[in-house]
Length: 326
Image 1 (cartoon, one colour):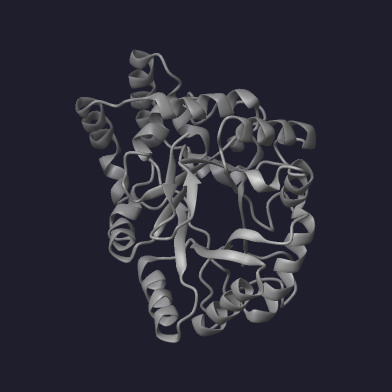
Image 2 (cartoon, rainbow, N blue to C red):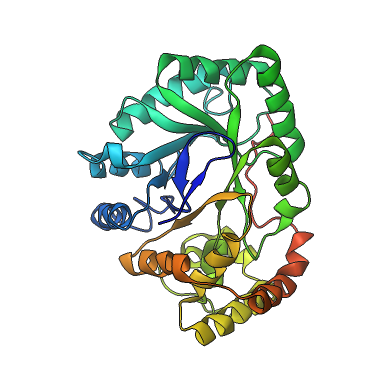
């Protein structure tokens, strides 16, 4: 396994991380635990979850699976997106974060988090309040590093400036959608990450499975796939992304590796990426993802992939989660 620094921090994370959005939802408890143990045994140390994944089941399952193995992983969770319909069930206010971290720690059966991430920018709470709260959590020992998710470049720079001004713990990372099918971070985010020493954590690195070749058309979707279980996902399953997936698949066939391995290998050539968070609902999918570490893309292959994915630099983002208006 390759390990990379998370931004300019001293924290090293596995280049391939494990996303657990499907734990307790598209993967039952037993399968989820098997996948998590398999990932750790294969060298994956970066485990990503959130307080809203599968309700709260993802965190609970991870807590159960990590008994006796907590020291083997870098564990991160998030807070900020809605957990319910009440007025205090969202955002990054001090009140919400202090409540949610206690719930997450209990479900994860741990007394600290390696990385605590704000799930999205909160326009209704002063950044000073959020960052001071996060600094207090670091000082208390409940959190070791802090990061953001779904922040835009200007939001991140503003947060870093506030932390520097007051001497508070600064964000070391930003977790955003980034893949061959979503290169919008290259407009501003990647340059910001290089300049400010922020690690980029890529979620949806396989475009929700589109880049694995599992979807042959917009009409026929495999049972149990994300497109079959999430009606909103079908909006992302368009002919342009399917054409890109075919290019990835053709290249993968020439290398005799799974398409997922090629898509992830391309992403790991980007210097700003500290870790690519790939999920799995079956052990076989995890095995396919891990093969990316052995794929060596030639300059000609990289050129082919860059050209095929060029339109997705300025296309709408594949995913970006923001708070609803209140």
